[in-house]
Image (cartoon, rainbow, N blue to C red; front, side, top):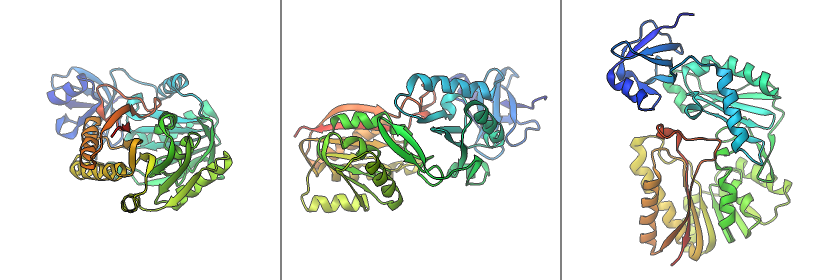
Length: 384
């Protein structure tokens, strides 16, 4: 099939030559007769070939470059699996395809044992979902594939937001194992695409430093709390979602964990009340949802991160451990470090940095695509 050719200006071409796969609508000179979701050839303003891309007729990201040569969707999924074979240990749940970082822009695939979730975030990947489904069926013989196309970014692509089973049946939560724990993932209603796979490697790292009485804020399905239980005398796990806490409680019971209690509460309010009551903890975990989903929300997000870290620090005595996370791409690690430093000064505390971490290895980061790095996790010791 003959492909349409899209022409871009010097700025768009340089962006791609400098390693970033997005070309914006303002940099398009001519779309020829390209239709929404088409695979197109891309040339610069001098007609020099740049490669192949997926074309969106709606998003400001008009082109998502795929490479300088034609590509095979099956080969790229196989390559993604080969990388996971190298980096994933002690888990049958992991991210199989991480969009741009696996050279499949707009496509996310997560594996939960013999079930998969897929997410198509642009017009092209949405069109390719039947082929993606066929590949997964051929390569893995899954019992179920669920399309978790409920992300808000699909609205920018004029695509419906929906969750549906596109292969097999889902009798209930997927049974998985992670870091020696038996867990379950609600692939239909759970946050993200089931559980927080991006924290998989961070759970045992945090557990190593945790001790004494611990408070796990925004626990969701209990990932940090359940891993920390082996090293702590007691863990209080807090979240505003009753459904998530019920899942966490079932997981605790399935693994014989008895020193974790689950509390449904607003974390900000709870931290304030505990501070007023002079409660103290030896370890506090802060893993909030994204406070900044776009650059315009960054100032408000910084205030939110400062406030929550300040409240947590007031609960920690010298020798205490603070773990704080941000999953907001726009909040860089440097900004998060500065925010925590300001919180520590206001709380009259001195912090020692123990570890600086990011998302798990199955969520790879491309050096020239900063959007692929989004999760930051910092571990501190209160020294005074």
